[in-house]
Image 1: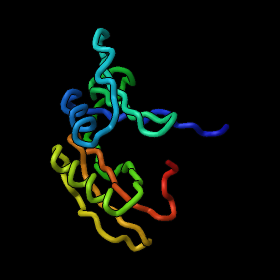
Image 2: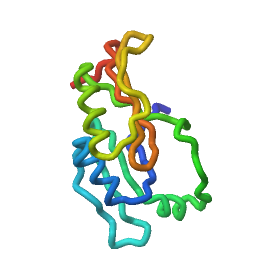
Image 3: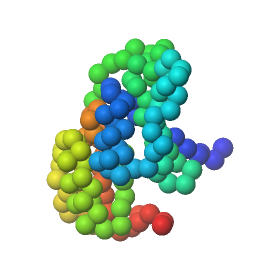
Length: 140
């Protein structure tokens, strides 16, 4: 089986605030919140790469859908890496994220492996690494 990840879903406390953060703060493209006519159906999708979307879904909807109990998670359970084309883009995204309400965890700086990166947490504590890795530059 060839793996093909097409959606990364983040559960959020306040869907409207999270959409504003990702759309206005980080500049990600979305058509906004859809599915509000369904109980537990409201969701927002953001285009990342061709064939890959970020979904924001209210936490209570994910709890309802899975049947799992909501628990406190460590923010270091995982991080989402956003690899960009330059050090300057790293700095700009970090500034934009902080202006939009993110908590800067680690200011962008040179990394031991030869790149440049910093970390922030979004409004719900999800950990993002903004990185310029010259060995893994994204295809444009």
